[in-house]
Image (cartoon, rainbow, N blue to C red; front, side, top):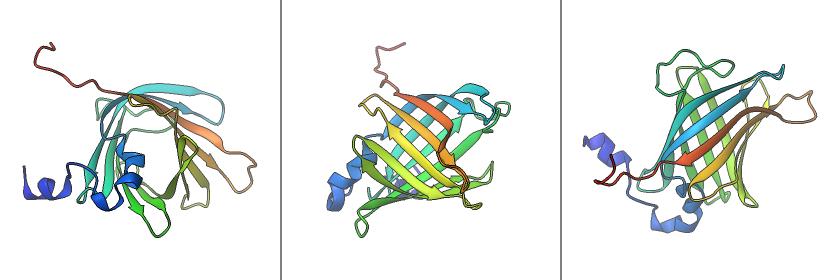
Amino acid sequence: MSDFARLLHASGPHPEHEAALRLYGRFVGDWNSEITVHAPDGARHTAIGEIHFGWVLEGRAIQDVWIIPRPAGSPAFPIAGNWYGTTLRVYDPAIDAWRISWFDPGRRVFRQQIGRPRGNDIVQEGTTESGELTRWSFTEITDDSFRWLGEAKSAAAQDFRLMVEVKARRRKAMTPADP
């Protein structure tokens, strides 16, 4: 492993804020996903993707990579385009919340959000460059699955509009006996 990879990755949460770090830490691992995008006209498109979460920066942060559709380099996914991006999620004890940055350089999409638990869910909220409000939520969270909703709302709209829905299932660990 290169020095960069060795210094970036961590084996688990930093003990200083271990309980708070578990909010997103429970997602560490590899996930298969089904992504459905919702167009304003009601059209829907579905594709298969993958998501990978890991501990980074001495276990003080979670980083993930979202690849949609799989395999990377597939033809453009209607409405949403192809995703090959990463999120850095850092717990900030000063605000008792998570500072979240999403980077998808291929689509030139960059988002900043604040994430907090809301009941059994995790809700991340932010604003786009054009002033649109964003709400990204992890819902229906279990040890082996979650549902992720990407919603947006313009200043003129009364309600958030569902743009993307992701259903994720944890990949089972392979054992030497598995084919």
